[in-house]
Image 1 (cartoon, rainbow, N blue to C red):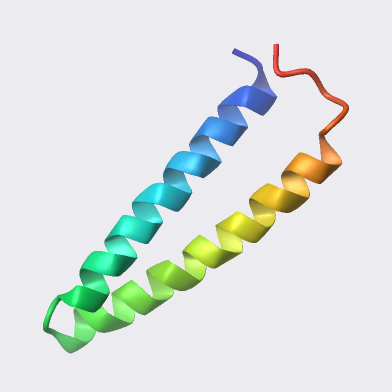
Image 2: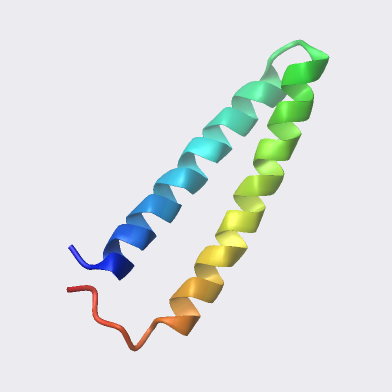
Length: 64
């Protein structure tokens, strides 16, 4: 597995875990969980933007 493929898998999994944690935090009852959920969802948006820029920058590099 190339470094590019590993990076893509790692970022996509990070986005998914952050999104699920953010939803859990928002759905939970406490204030601390709400704050962590909002921060996590903001991180999900940030990592998604990073993924788009990464794909644009390294589109010429092979996945193998």
